[in-house]
Amino acid sequence: MIHNVLKDVKVVLASESPRRKILLEMLGLKPLVIPARIDETLTALLAHKQAMLHARSKTDAVARFLDHDALIIGSDTIVCVDHQNLGKPNGKVQAAQYLRMLSGRSHSVYTGVSLRYQNRVLTDYERSTVTFDPLSEAEIDAYIRTGEPFDKAGAYGIQGYGAQFIRKIQGCYFNVMGFPVNLFYRMLEDFLHD
Amino acid sequence: MIHNVLKDVKVVLASESPRRKILLEMLGLKPLVIPARIDETLTALLAHKQAMLHARSKTDAVARFLDHDALIIGSDTIVCVDHQNLGKPNGKVQAAQYLRMLSGRSHSVYTGVSLRYQNRVLTDYERSTVTFDPLSEAEIDAYIRTGEPFDKAGAYGIQGYGAQFIRKIQGCYFNVMGFPVNLFYRMLEDFLHD
Image (cartoon, rainbow over all chains, first blue to last red; front, side, top):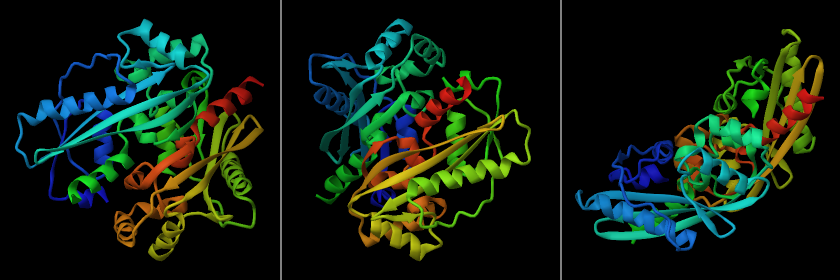
C-alpha cells in the first residue's frame, strides 16, 4: 500500500489543487505542497500529451529548488470533448459554454502524472469517460452560482454539487477528481522498485 | 439542483453511515441524522431487492416518529460477487475472506434508496461495477490494519485507502461510496413534482 511504500520518503506535491492534496492525505501521506506556477495554456497537442507535458513541467519547476531525496509529484487534468481540450474556464460566460458542450453526452478526462525521485522521472496518464445528464439553462445558471466551476478543468467538479448531474463514469473516479490514485500506486511500485 | 429543489424541505437521513451524511452535505443539504436500527441480516433475496427492502425499512422505522412534512431518506448498500451478497464483515477473518473474493476481478455494488414524504414512498436502486487489482496477502493484511474495512459492505471503502486498489468503475461512483447522488436527484424530481 502507498503509505507503506512511501513511509521513509519525503513527498512534495507540485500542484496547488486542494483536491490533489486531499487525495494524497486520504492515502495516509502528508505532502509538502509547493504550487508550481507553469504556463498552462493549451496548445495543439492531444489531450493526454498536453496533460503529461504540464505534469512534467510542474515537477521540473519544483525540482530545481529541492534535494534529490524527495519524491516530487506533478499532475494536470484536461477535459476533452469533440477533440477540443478544455482547461479551467476564464469566467462565467466560458463556464456556461463549457457546460453546454458537456450536457447530455459523454466526454473524456485525462490526467497526467509525473514522478521525480533521485534524478529519475516517470510520466504517465489516465483516461476516464464521464456521462452528463442533459442540463437545462436554469441548471447551468444555478450551478455556476455555486462558484464550483471556476478552478476546475471543463468547468465542473465531480466531487461537489456537480455530482448530481453525472449519470455514470467509466474508469477511475479519482482521475476525474484530478489525481488517478490507482495509476499512482502502480507507477510508484514500478518506480521505487526499479 | 438538489439544494434548490429541497430549499424549503426538512431532510432526515435514516442511516448512521457517515459517508451518506457527507454526501448530502456535499450537495448543500443539512440533514437531521436519525440512525434507523433495522435488522440488516441478508436473506435469499437478490441484491437489488435486498438493498431496496433495507432502505425502505429504514425510512419506515424513522417515519413513525416524525411529522409528515419531512423528507425521509433511507439507503442501504450491498456488494455482490458470484451471486453472493456481502454486507459488512463481522471481523478480521471475514474481512480478509471478502477481500480475497474481490481480488483481481469485477463485482457489482447495489444501493437501494427509499424516499418518504407526506405519506408517499418512492424506492429505487442503482448498480455499479467495480474492478479490483489483484491483492497480495500482504496488501490484504495491511489494508485490514488501516481499520477501514469494518463498517463497509464488502469490506472496502472506495473513498479511502481502498481507492488505490480499484482499477476502474463503471456507473455511479457515489453509489459505490454508499449513496447514488444522480439517482437521488432524478428520484426527487419525479417525487416532488408529481
